[in-house]
Amino acid sequence: MPRRRRRSRVSALEGGREEEAPPEAAAVPSAPLTSQQQTEAAAERILLRGIFEIRRGSCDVVLSERALRWRPILPERPAGDSKYDWLCKEEFIELKDIFSVKLKRRCSVKQQRSGTLLGITLFICLKKQQNKLKNSTLDLINLSEDHCDIWFRQFKKILAVMEYEGHALSLLKECELQGFDGVVCVGGDGSASEVAHALLLRAQKNAGMETDRILTPVRAQLPLGLIPAGSTNVLAHSLHGVPHVVTATLHIIMGHVQLVDVCTFSTTGKLLRFGFSAMFGFGGRTLALAEKYRWMSPNQRRDFAVVKALAKLKREQRSPKSDCNDQWQMIQGQFLNVSIMAIPCLCSVAPRGLAPTTRLNNGSMALIIARNTSRSEFIKHLKRYASVKNQFNFPFVETYTVEEVKVHPRNNTSGYNPEEEDETASENGFPWNVDGDLMEVSSEVHIRLHPRLISLYGGSMEEVNDSKVTCNCF
Image 1 (cartoon, rainbow, N blue to C red):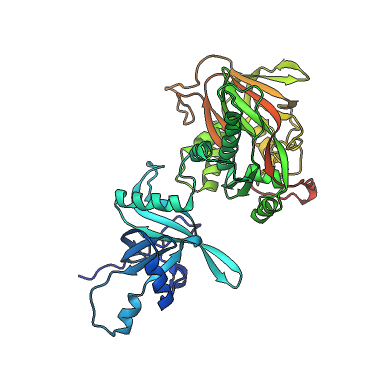
Image 2: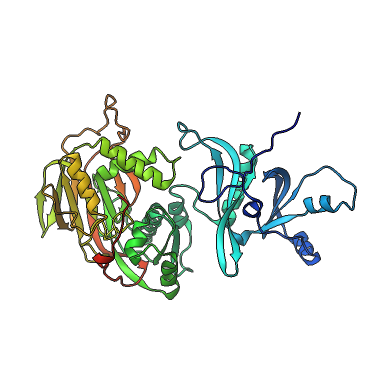
């Protein structure tokens, strides 16, 4: 009985489907080893050895200190068969060309975060032509959880990549920082905010301060560099004016540093985290929805969450208190969204920023409140962020310049009601969007600004010319 031709396991970096790859796309740069290379390969210390399916066949795979090598496993043939010799040639990738690794899983709609293990995916930087580079992937297919876990951990150790939420925090708590000039984070807003939080916590610990209750935090010891590699990159965009990898890298190389304001988020006197911006209400519920659909691509997940949150637009019973000119001002009512921004929060959907009048280190925060209104009017307000028109020119939108804000529920419930069909409801409390991370709090949240608390690699930013702003994201 003839066997069906198996599909290629090599998939494009930007594609989610496994599809048949043409030979030139599936190929990873490899060459027959010279005698000198064979000698060097034999001298390298072997870290791991195992069997994986690569492309369409089983291979003997060897991971050494400098390279990943594999050779197809084929039945014995008579010596001198040129075709057989070509099929048996050893291929390799140098570890310096691998920039990331992840477990490859097949996830269904209901599984969302977990799924059937397929193997390991390596993300590789390849030379395309002359001086051009391109990214590609190599799949190491093996259905054994234990086998893949051993290899995955070894790759992570080699690459020193953040493995999980909170990994940067644990690393910077233990790492000796005396011999370093700075810290660089390659990632999105979540990773950048986590590293900034970890650096500031480390500074408080070194200063002998109690990290649970911090009234006057000390400045972080090392500057932080941000290279944008996420889906939104709000922090890097606000810092450099553009989410441009080369610009961010050159600021780090040149040592351009500027001080940036940071907020502390606390409840009942206990520090929750450091951060740069926060949204409660529509912004928090949108993020909570997006987190439930992690199996989608970032852009699809964001758009889907926005549409679904708009369809179930919900008013929040909150009472923000703002400290304006050393006097507390109580603001009560039903709100669709509350935003507190210590930075401009530039992004693709808001080229001029979610808080255009705020600067990186002007010693104040923008408090933006959207009161209860119709869905159509609220959508008009959201669309204004992508245009040159004033997004705050609505009767239901209020803006304040503050240094402290307290936001507390009108009642003492957590906001969780089992009878309500609300995907964002949680027993842990109300959803907050803090720098793109989900934070759930059931009690009052106290946000306080601390001027020039952290140093970030970046230069002075030019003002965006409104006539050049063109965005059709909405």
